[in-house]
Image (cartoon, rainbow, N blue to C red; front, side, top):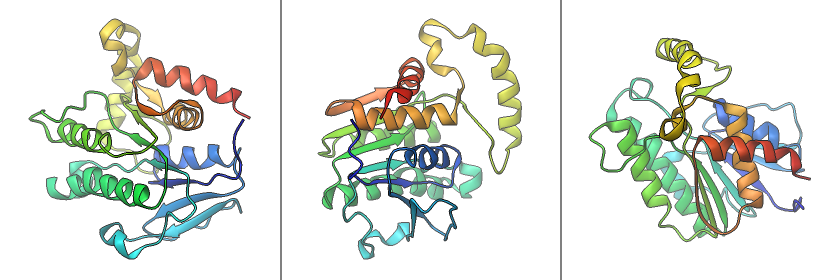
Amino acid sequence: MINKDEIPCVAGSTGLVGSCIINNLTKFYPKVISLTRKKVDYSSEKIHNIVIDYDNLNNENIFHGVDHLYIALGSTRKKAGSAINFIKVDYNYCIDLATDALKNGVKRISLISSVGSNPNSSLLYPKTKGLVERDLSKLAFDHISIMRPGLILGNRKERRIFEKIAIYIYSFINHFLFGNLKKYKSILANDISKAMIYQLIKAGDGLHVLEYDQLIKSSKNFNTLS
């Protein structure tokens, strides 16, 4: 049974997965907090928007009363403008948020990472994702769930050329990804959001890492929540 007195909070709530998380949470909770860098006017009265400065979290008071934190922050090197800015968004902001949340009493947290994440990789993207996973798992939350999706599908506000090509390719090769390669299958953003919510509400304490099969299973179980 869902405790509707609990308050979930979403960082990265204007992104592809984050917006799905927000919308799905409003199906169960009377109050959902959305953290954004700019003001967002939501049509639902259940969503409470808090504008924050990710570079100065110590000056914020955003986690008072919050029980669950969903982190759906993410960028690319090109969009961020440099490797340093990419690391700031995909590592520093995530760890800073998690640390501040834990300090203020948040017990359960979920993070979107990526398939192939590896802190020892020589490549910027998988290394950064691996490092944030590694350091998040060291924090003393009751529950930590980490999502490792492949290519994320959905209606983006901005469609990158690479993603258009990748979606076309994946629509073909998905059928040939099985066994150890199955984790690289593309997946809908809404399915990821449902898996995150189900895990945070229903899974036990400790660290939980979900790849394609587990994400699909948990997303289907979302419909059993009440």
